[in-house]
Length: 433
RNA sequence: GGAGGGAUGGCAGAGCGGUUGAAUGCAACGGUCUUGAAAACCGUCGAACUGAUUAUCGGUUCCGAGAGUUCGAAUCUCUCUCCCUCCGCCA
Image (tube, rainbow, N blue to C red; front, side, top):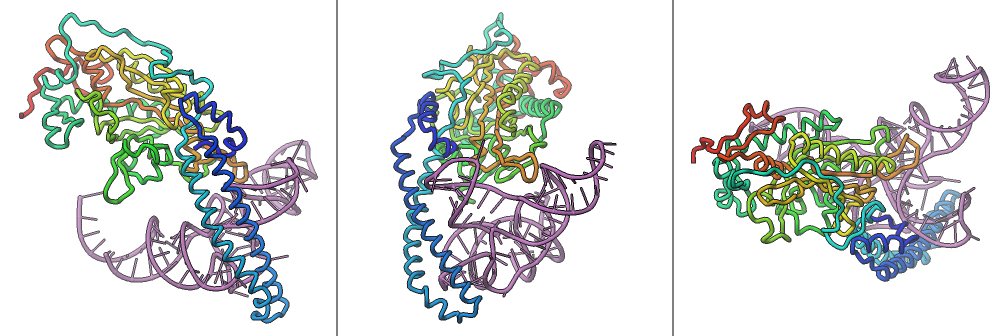
């Protein structure tokens, strides 16, 4: 949530910043809401002050021996009148506050100065490329062909169970995904992250906190019961909300969390996009990193968090590039974002496998997550960051396609061999069909 | 699922419907003392919102949440949420 003080004092600064991400701030609407809010608020508060004064006088009289009835009678008329006025004003004042907050919640975050300008998603800056796309001296297969070839990836059955955009993994391929997940977790834990296990169902408040709601409810799976509960679209939601409505001491910052979870996304806006294979699924596994920091730590934390995600790709030894998103392409809550894109031989393209974002105090304001240096020190907003490290489903694809052999088998990356107990996935994995 | 108990400031813990935004203790912060530290002593010490004459001075709201009674509610009534204890059931 954008700081309303900031909005009042420097509205054009905010408007300019938001225009960089192609969002037009409705200045007139805000000013109109503000005027209404101010008017009803001030009027209400004045009356409340009056009422409090009367009550105090009655109290004094009673204390000094005036019988209760007589004391009350002296002010009866005034107080009845004031109370009815207050009641009326209360409604309008409440309505103004609510409208204002509802509107504030729909404003995206402002891009950081270091986020480049741009008018489309193609205006990102390529920061670095690691490794070179492999060349194959045989006709290469994509992950679907490879997976089906070894009878480890079954889309037809998934359709029967759940519909499109789901997959059933079997045998060694299912195992590879699990090993990948465990290994990533282990790497991050060794790098100082605290492992967390979280609920996969959250209340709408948590989603408002991280910014998925109120604007993007179409992307979420909502439960019928309990109503207003949702499946998490990413572990970022429970992880970031860990500090909601709380004030923590600064010596516990930065906090670095890692969590593996399934992610559930309706993909409502992406009909027909990436329908082939398991690139874009309603349900996928992801290892997520979340940091809670102070304002000073925030920006440099993004560099560190992104490096932690890159580390995984480097250890897996797959070609990838690091991209700095332009303002236009920024997510709702982000001020600055690095995407990591892995080389997918099956598509001959780099595809997003991680997105690491710095959100400033935007999410913290929504969820009231704050810190202070000691018990009576001033209270400050926490700054939040999140990043995938990595999207496991896509990592599985990347490994399969980059490590494929002529016979349809897949070489296991060095770092996974011990856990897998082999160095190769064979093209015909004996699974009862 | 049944029975009971509870929710107050960073924490612990008081609080006859009327200077209670809230005693007291701890913690924290400033100071005195000390070569320094500790101890002791003195002082300060909740949050959100908001107005104006905006490094200042006011006001409003907040004692789990919401509604109600009242001139006035932390205190009374109702509903809800969460926590604890016991019993039952269960992975």
